[in-house]
Image (cartoon, rainbow, N blue to C red):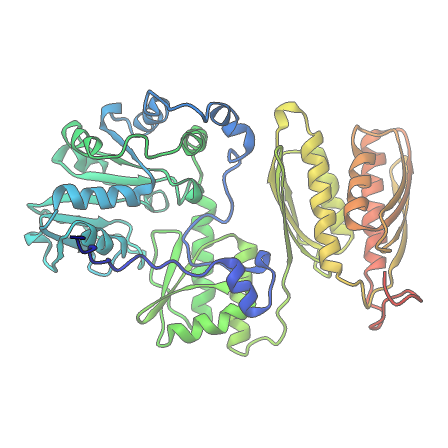
Amino acid sequence: MTRPLPEALVAYQWPPSSEDLAAQVGLRPADILRFDGNVSAAPPPSARPATVAKALADVNEYDRGRYAQLRTAIATHHEVDVEQIVLGAGSDELIVLAARVFASGGTIATVPANSYSMYRFAAGMAGATMVDDPATADLVYVCRPNNPTGELPDIPDVEGQLVIDEAYADYAGVDALDRVSDGAIILRTFSKAYGLAGARVGYAVCDVARAEILSSRLAPLAVSSLSAALALASLMSPPNVAAQVEERERLAAELTSLGLAPVPSFTNFLYVPVDNPQEWYDALLPFGVVIRTFPGAIRVSVRDEDDDNVLLDAVRTVQGLVTENSRAWRHRRATAETRIDVRLRLRGQGRVYVETGSGLYDHFLQQLAFHGGLDLRVEGTGDHETGDHHTVEDMMRAFGDALDGALGDRRGIVRYGESRIPMDEALAHAVIDLSGRPVSRIVIEPDPGMATHALESFAQNAKLTLHVEARGENAHHVAEGAFKAVGRALNTALTKDGDLVRSTKGTL
């Protein structure tokens, strides 16, 4: 006789993928900005292939020490004993585990009542009942700071087991680690401030007795060796969230000026009460802006200034305050050595930020973009321990790819540009043709090392013809003059000129 299958639980519902949403509104997946996940706008600098190289070389083996190095680093970070640390595949695994251990078939409450939906799913997996009164519950989850509202609730004194979920504590600047000695279990994650949501690493900090209970009920080595390596590397250089907190306050002030009323937040997101959350979702999606909806509210993640300005411009357009919405062309180049992210507007205001760790060539690209009249943001990381070659080359190739993409069919531009730039004793001459054909003839004498190769890489990926001749006595001056001249020539070539493709063939 066949036994009946168990009843299916209500499953956690993930939103559609960026690819599906892009297809829905006719955008590229790269143009979809996720304001619905409460994660960092970019991974940490340590998240690159070199970080996981050793773990990858040993991926056929188990870590017999249960990631002792990572657990020790976490313990040192929080000034507790290593025996008090329990690793999990994200803090969600530990949320579910706590429900099964401390409330199997019993009762669970949350503080605040409007809190993270995973607690309710964990109750279902444990066969537990959700109750309203924390004082009567076997297990009490305190989300502090709270998701989805962003508030910082008080911690109640209760008889049941207390689990304090501090996923967003880095943004609040406070924690409840002092409650560990009273029997509380503190949950942390590498998914938020540390920028490793995809790695799925979380941990519990608790007394030794509770750590032993939790560990004894975990599957062995639930965290992968690659994820453990990423977490350890990020912990060696903990994130400074000051800039994101400052950006949170700016975004809140801007939304307030637009007639919205974000709830004061201690997290990396804003909870905004509205009458029609689904209408806001539907209205913002065509701009590539994906938000999270709740009954009576929307929630938006805080990204960086450029991304948040896309959100703000979309809100203004929906409100009828502006009629044009200029979007940056986005491109990511990821190789075994580097990760480079580019955001580019062709007709900008010279707002330029370049940071890849290649100081001199970051500076040169800043000059090119500024004199080209572009808005450009380039961020990345590379294997600088082997020199700047890979990072500089990939930075210029990524910039070239972004320019090629932003130009599209190259309709409505002059196409040709020329510039001469004196740089003290140096003189640089650049001629550019946005031809769609990658050709470069470049002479930079003396070259500080990679200036010629950098411009060649740019021309190749941007699919343009570039002639540069720069000479002088000081290598820095010669190269900087060359990059400025290329920028000025590009500025001219991008000048608006009707609506034609400037070629008798009708295409470039």
